[in-house]
Length: 477
Image (tube, helix red, strand yellow):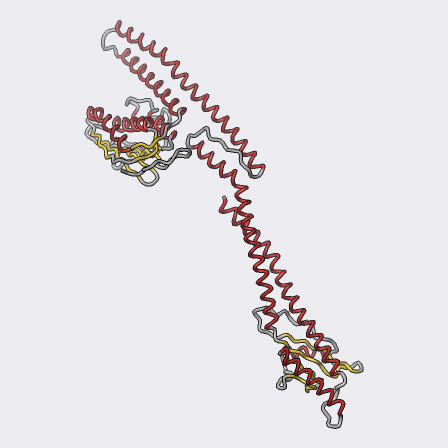
């Protein structure tokens, strides 16, 4: 969520800064050009005043006219030399009254001609188009020279824009620097804002994960953030308290019921034994009643074990998974040999975080199942492997296996395949294994083993759980 919310905020802030910065840059460029245009208008007005009484072409007999023309020409030459701006005063017939430089004349077409034609209509040329820093254009301003209400000549200036474009660019760089600084501040603010908004969400997600993996005591700690998320955290804690209370009641009921039923069931089995002594030896009915009574006692024992497994907390420690698995293989080998099943183990030393007692009980249930359902002459293999994150114990058998539909249900409480109803069991062994493993952060998975049989994978973590000190030397040995 952080990676989705942060870019959204940054894009919105960048859009706001651009919406402010672009008009500011355009306004700055317009202001710079307008200042230059005003200066050129003042210059053309001054030249128009000087040219107002120089209205005829050069005449050797006209001393005053020639003197005024010389003064005007001198001013234009000085103006060009100082500012490198081409300027000239042209009669209506395009002939020059005075101009600088000497080789500059009124062109037939172009921007200068358009400004000249407009000034002939007795008005100053309109403001030129905006010149941007990447455009190498000149700035043309024309003003009419009016005498007795008639336009007798036009003053035209053709200014280079390099300096103006440089100033515009410098102004834009300042704006860009300000925008960049503002963007950095905006990114910092967005980081703080997203962290403040999402911190309760991260805590809620971590707590949900803890509860989902069996740590039902986990709760959302008080944190900052928006009021809505704080209310959500409080509601979540209330929900978790209620769920834990219901589960505690359920476990207590199962444990109490299992415990309370054991005594009357034991008494009932004892009376059945006494009754069997009064009946002829080999009576099938009484033998069937005794078998069902023992099966019911086993179910009660398993129910009590399941309730204890779900209720107790795992005592995690660094455990040699290979040695523990080899020990269980050795313990179950006599049972396998008695059935004609070959039980083998490949158990190299490897360490992980686990509750040794709980893991041993889980492996007992898995190996017991594998041996129980594997026919004589076949093999059950136990293999221990590990990588950087987890250690696994894989138990494979060559029994009848399970169908795809049965694989989705294996491990459910009291579930047994319809094909195996005649085999002794309560249907709780794998459920107990799952509960024992989940308490320590482990898991159990089932899949087919080709060409036939079942493959059970028990996984335990190699990383130290939250709140546990990191183990030294937690590596394969």
